[in-house]
Image (cartoon, rainbow, N blue to C red; front, side, top):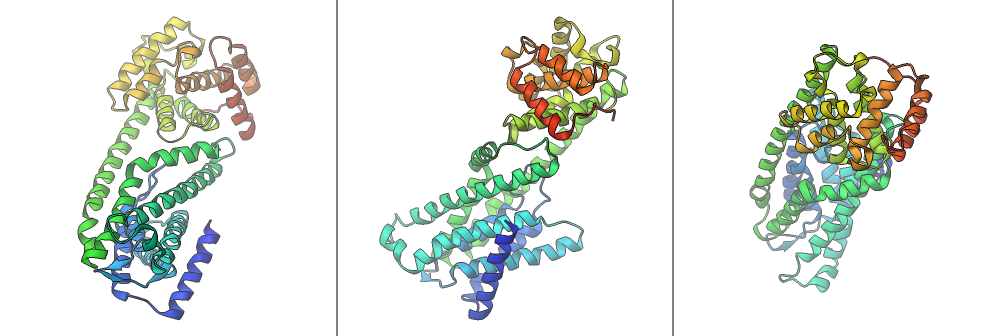
Length: 412
């Protein structure tokens, strides 16, 4: 993907240098819009799809721009790509000077996505084919909206490829199916992706009527959305830190071994990916795995070694319900609390996330009990598939451990 984006950028830059810059005023307006959007973007959080919505909308608007104040433009697809590439490069300089990294994968994705939109729109518009298809009346906006839909599909394919590449870099046990990642990206279009796309189309249509000053007005709501998203991200970070601190409370109090919650969360997340969980469902699983033992703080005497998997079923359920009540007060969400509450139920009555947490927690507990190492722990789990553990979850755990190496769960 990086190679394709680099080749496309070099061709676009060479073409623009040879033939000159058409409508330099418009190029400057949209170049500054993309640059400003990149400069004010926040560093991408884990799983975040678009940290610079203003830059994305500005680049998309330039790709879908046909007229300016009623006069046809002549900038073409390659100039669109060249302007967006130069704007991203200019924004990367001060960010690098401040020690803020610019992700090459995101830049490549932006270049390819904008290039796709420009190639679909500009030739058809310049040749008059779009007008013959849609006319120049109230039906014409269907043309940029159609291109927008195709561009969104292209972007989801690229985003899923990048997500799979990032998961592969995390380790051999953390590779989710590509189909699940693609479905997750498609579902995400209903959020910020739709706002970015619609703002890009409306900005392009606004420039067609009002001229180059339209972006300053039409992109204002998206800027406010970006500010709100930044605050929301800060709240999510605080919530995650709170959950991590509560998870460590059981270790500090001596109820669970050091590193148990972190190990269970990491392994449960890998198993969840193996079973096709992505996006919010994977986040719920990770948070529930971190908090799964918080109910042990209600016990008068700690469980030996913190191994709740070896307790009677009734006691396990009591601890799980107490833990769910604590989680509901942390702001982690009802979905996380439900997983914690139901982790001790028979697996046929559990949601998938609770089945994963129960199985991975039991695996870590059994490894600490010296039942013959990871292979012995897996064998014990397989013996419990009639009632306690779903066979598919146990086999997914085995595949994850096999790819990562069957090593005992270590402390810390």
